[in-house]
Picture 1 (cartoon, rainbow, N blue to C red):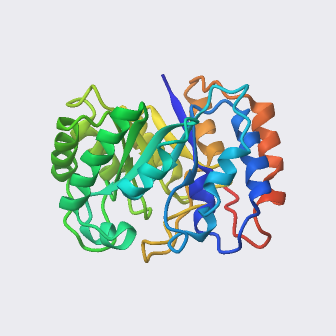
Picture 2: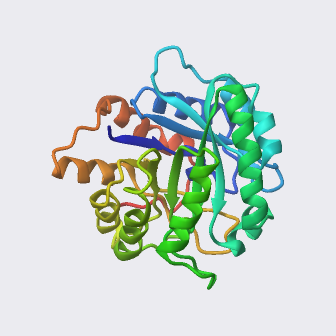
Length: 290
């Protein structure tokens, strides 16, 4: 089954001008009608770290889940964030930004690989007790801009360790857009056949030049779960790097159409959501046109 995970949280998190809570609610409610498998809608992080997402709990209260099969995912940076998210029954998935780059872990969640692995175990234990599922992001899965050691064997080894403690969903993530078809293909080749019990996804940040070839590299090596953003905005504001936008939903749909692969989205609802972009996101943003 092919899954599309729409990620308005990633689109919004780096925008300095606060998007009013009511506008977020209206936009995400429109996305809930499209038919995405999952919406990565918000994050329980420190308001000092990501001010834009300080209203995640209020947004959640305004969402209409009465007529949608789409599940909700919230990003959490640590066990404390997971504990805050835990009482919200509407949330099916908790997303944790693990990484195989120590530099990025320090910048993003003030941690290192060893501590982050231990935190993963604690969050996984909470999920198992509360009926939520953990989505583990291996950030910098295709390389990194910091000079930290990377190779497919490192991706394999940490996937093996995560598998052994019970992680079942892993998104290989190109957080700063450094991935190439070769590195993306090699990373998926290293893990996707070996760990058939894991649902692997791709979280890509792309440019017009590498969008299609990077999708192809992931898809041709077995990935059937992709994170997207309708307007292509996004990037990690904690990375200390230029924010490269997310994979645009329309670009993934074009790839699927070329391959005659059904996506199951309601295109009328999809275009309705697109029509809300200008009234939701602040004017003057450099929204990718490709």
